[in-house]
Amino acid sequence: MNYDIKDIKLAKKGALRIEWARNNMPVLGLIAERFRKERPLKGLKIACCLHVTTETAVLSEVLKSGGADVTLCASNPLSTQDDVAASLVEHLKIPVFAIKGEGTRIYHEHIKSVLRVKPDITMDDGADLVSAIHQALPSVYRNIVGGTEETTTGVIRLKALANQSKLRYPIIAVNDAQSKYLFDNRYGTGQSTIDGIIRSTNKLLAGANVVVCGYGWCGKGVAMRAKGLGSKVIVVEVNPLRALEACMDGFSVMPIKDAAKIGDVFVTVTGDINVIRREHFAIMKDGAIVSNSGHFNVEIDIPGLEKISKAKRSTRDFVDEYTLKDGRRIYLLGEGRLINLAAAEGHPAQVMDMSFANQALSAEYMSKNHKKLRNDVYKVPEEIDKNIARLKLKSMGAKIDTLTPEQKKYLSSWEMGT
Image (cartoon, rainbow, N blue to C red):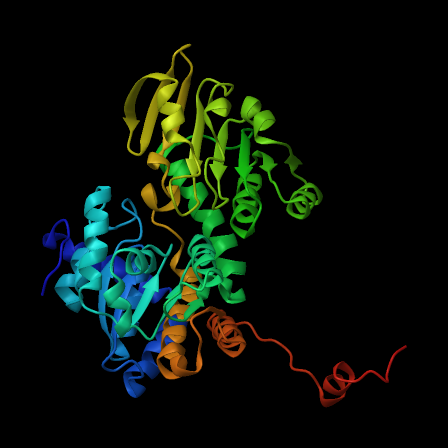
């Protein structure tokens, strides 16, 4: 078995951490039970480009229990948990190509290594796998029946491909499932981003001006958690509706050029490029902390920061100090990559339970229905989405009501009114 990881001796530690995650992912546990009996993925090769974390390990187990041959690489150079990668190789015999801190060249070599298995299904987080297939490895897609995509940034890229009629096979946008983005993006990103900032800096957020760039579901989660810790939250937005929502949620809203002057901690969660730029660094406070929780490290203009700096040094793990020419210091966290995975452990297992349940069930759906689908980006089927919510509620001991026949009739008629 070919693989490329940091150290196979880390496998024992990884197995214990995977066990902890597994115990907190009951929905995936129920899916695994059925998969072991039905083997709906038997004979399929699944190439995964995901963050190599304990939760991803549990998903890999579930896919394998369904009969799939799974191969895994990282979807971000800094998100790999090396002990988890070792356990997947040692204990599950799953080929993994991922090393925390790998350079860009190795990162793309690892993607190519995964694609050499000639997969039937791709499972992506950020669309780098799909991008590699479409740009450099066109021969690979001839074997692929479909794929799934985990995150907002990836869905944006895939929809751009589909709009240009260049998408080579159908893909389910797992990110667009309500049981994913309403919970993973908001509660997962909210908690894990703050976790990463605190772990890397040990700074007190109470009383600090925390600037959140972007007020989508991820931004809402970060703002909510920062507020809960006593921060004075400032939201930066380009969408008037989201900006209005932030105002009514009790946050200050202003352009980045104004927020840059007063912010103590900055977090970008937009999915766009150069949100915080050279001209903004030039007016920041001495000691300002800048971080990103969007998928790629392009949201912060790092080359622009380097051009106006006279010195750079690492002061703590995942903290780079840039000294500007006038002596002010700007602290960049996690090299501008996903701070929740670079400096922390990513989303808690309880919320990834739903996200990865969507991945597993979408892979099953794609294996059974790909012949009916065009080369386009699809939502997770509504019944899968609702079923995952039902299973999660059950695992939490929560119960809901059902409509009476009278109520169903009322909702489907137009005659009855006041």
